[in-house]
Length: 433
Image (cartoon, rainbow, N blue to C red; front, side, top):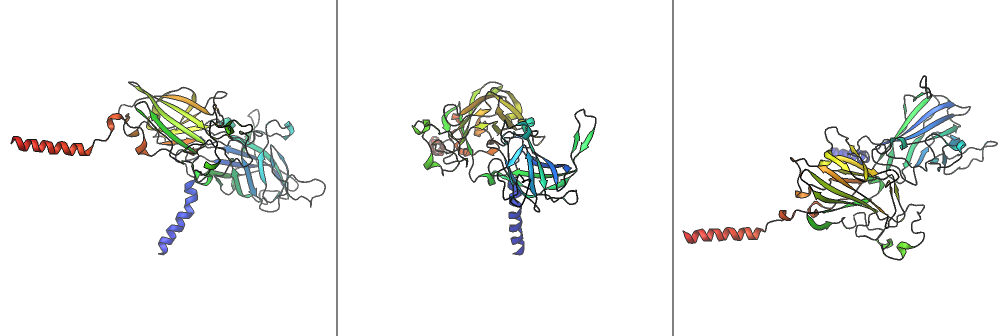
């Protein structure tokens, strides 16, 4: 009995960590690095760099929100490239007043266009951070913070704790700060190396189970060899918004201000049977001698949300032979060197990298040409459809396998007809004998 209880406890202890594991991006994480660049009379100045090492999960508008808890009674004297959302009670300070006196400060990025004296390298993008696999140069956000009433040496500094990250919603879990070897910098002429006085890292991982109890997208299928369309499952993303949705051709859909986002980011969805903000449609379009062609369409059903720098990930065994992608950018993802069955699609810059809100412009589409592998290629048993689909890093709900479009000649043979034929044959043999 004790051993069973021990296993149950071990399961629940390991569950949060297991939920954050992404098999298509096993090493993906967001690393927050604190570099102490100078000591002050009562603390230190640190450069804080947030690096998104996730291959296909970006931080979209309204951007990241970073929080932590001070170990002692530290305050923030000033910040460059970011700001806290609240100042807190700084009444005990006379003369210079700190930027923030809260025990648990909450920090957000600055908006684009702030004065140059408030800017820091890789700052001021409203908290939007690209995925590493999509645009490494835009996958970093940074700011500088001056901390007071703190330690003034490597031995007296107490690391912040209980880090939280919203990106922009829930889903991220951050580990404790860990001291690591100091960051080394190269001077502009690349002839001299300098290093931080002290460095610590915080690693944050994403779990879709923590982000939402329901999926955020669904997938539908169709093909040239079957007239039926396999829709998204009913209430695929939950039907909690069913009573507050908008009919596509109603007056409300054209009402002024319908696309204005709310502070709580609550969606306003178009009325559908699946009630998902995003639907991905995979259509098997054409069959050639050596190739086959697929059309992919992504539709936005949220009137209050457009998606900048969106990403779409699909897993299919024939993605190891992609010949051409016509209207999207494409990058193969190879988390395991021996398997090349996963790819990332994303919009071409300044062309279709923005997926507009629900309405006539709320969709993007492309076509995909793949070379057949004659040893594995088939249209039978739903082989032509993807095994997994992710939109913006969240896995989409696929239809059940028995609902996939099937080949006309693969219909089930009537077992009654077979038995009748067998009986007739036996009867015929009995008569002629």
